[in-house]
Figure (cartoon, rainbow, N blue to C red):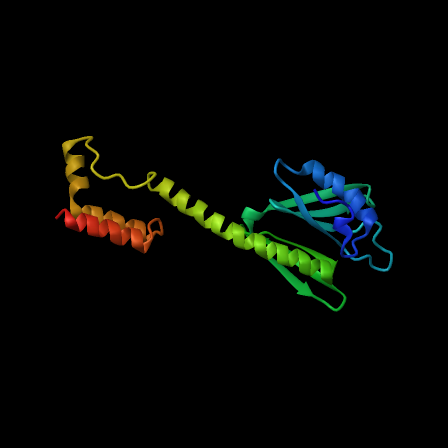
Length: 199
């Protein structure tokens, strides 16, 4: 578990981290660990309680104070649902924008550049990891929609058996599965060769 000292290594305000850290920890699920917290730049002393972005190994959490900093508003996005994290650097600070797979945009301005870069680097690593996980889930969903897999030679009735035994019908089904992305080209080629061998 990261300490306040670990989370203030890039000039984050320790008082802000002290206030935010316990609340973020109380929202963490099992096996969820806080990786980084970026704190909005204090603009000429106008920010009594600046906004923050907390990164965990499971989600991005946007933290915005309400009621002059007396309470905090949390909005979180699972890494699995984050399509992109974008950083736009200005002269003194950067803006971080989170875009979800459903098209929701959430941004936070005035993040110090060093913190924004660290946050962005971590986000890119998480995006890569979750992109593959999302692809696997989509394939599983497609397979489930297609009936949980390819069933060949189901002897429920003689007419059903004749339909599933027909090599042309099998090849057409396989081609449909290939076109929809459920089967890879290699899987299709292997099944095709197998079917053609029985003709």
